Image 1: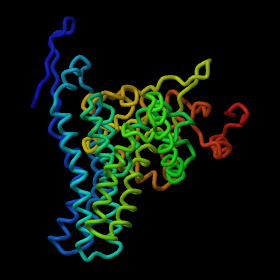
Image 2 (image 1 turned 180 degrees about the vertical axis):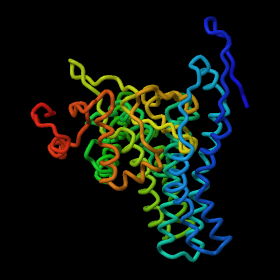
Image 3 (image 1 turned 90 degrees about the horizontal axis):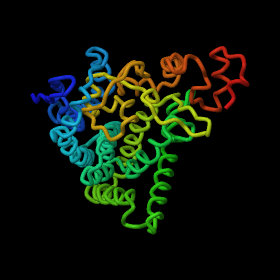
Image 4 (image 1 turned 90 degrees about the vertical axis):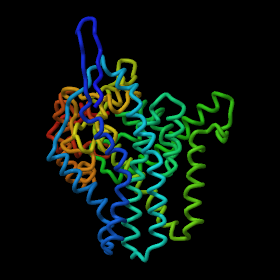
Amino acid sequence: MATYTLNHPEKGLIEYTDKKRYLWMLSLLTPLFPMLGIGLYFALGSQWWLLTPLAYSYVLMPFLDWAIGSDENNPPEEIVPQLEEDRYYRILTWVTSPMHFIVLIAMAWFVASQPLSIWSIVVVAITAGMYSGLGINTAHELGHKKTAFEKWLAKIVLAVPAYGHFCVEHNRGHHVDVSTPEDPASSKMGENIYAFMLREVPGAMRRGWLVEKARLEAKGKSVWSLENEILQSYAITAVLQGGLIIAFGWIMVPFLMIHNVWSWFQLTSANYIEHYGLLREKDANGRYERPKPHHSWNANYICSNLALFHLERHSDHHANPTRRYQSLRNFDDLPELPNGYYGMYLVAYIPWLWYKVMDKRVLDLPHIQGDLNKVNILPAKRDAIIAKYGVDDAAALAV
């Protein structure tokens, strides 16, 4: 296991060993878990085994996060440049990228070649979509980096879930507007995940197209130029998914529709829990403050972070978007989720339970302390939220 060392002029010898170095391979292996259900189906002959990957994500992973707990350790800042230059970590993201293609193609073949019931086809499509949604996470890590290779790899991976606008919209839209009412990818207090998806998916697509159009027009080029990064990714999607329909027949149409929507829903689920209710303040000139760690919900749970390239250390990511996953830090007094992402997704899918778990957490945050003026609230629910939390002076809380 590699140990990084530095002779600091003031602090002396600094040493750091990443004890999770080889455990990060779980991020590489996680996209392959759908194959486990197929393997068990062939080995044991029952279609019920196709539920195994869903049980892994929505039952086993939340339990492991609860049982094993969190890791709040940070690498020394002086060592971070060495850690970021270690190619081992970036190779894991590179090797993970083709896994998403392999799994989708394998599951498409499985659906087309096996005598499955309708419910089994739906389960396999949802499973494929859930794990293709991880492709958006892989692209998220790659798309924030400065190398042309990684940026192109991100566009290629986004072809699998048919979400080619993501990196453009996320980097140049969401990271600009995060935790503001203007951001379609930041959820508001009182907004359920299903209403959020109906706002987030079309809003993000529209914003991505507009910012890419503006970039190209500034260069004197048409939005339909071959340099359009969104169209580049969607062209790969057309080849991939069109090829699956040609190869495996009409059954691919409903399969891919379910797959695509469910993969998008995975991003919706992440966006929903990452910024729920959080609001950046405006200065005297009406400009929003710079995104800070407390403008994102954080989670340090070991297992799900290993499966998601440290996505759950989202607070540091928004404060330092180009920092690589192995270097992301925990901070004191951050908004902290009570379970990892997989567990919180399940809670979010039951709106009344989500509000019960999270609304008081929002109000109890150190930078909010019950002040609803500092909360991003769904306008339609503002009066109800004011009434629920016992604030009498509604005028003082008007936007």
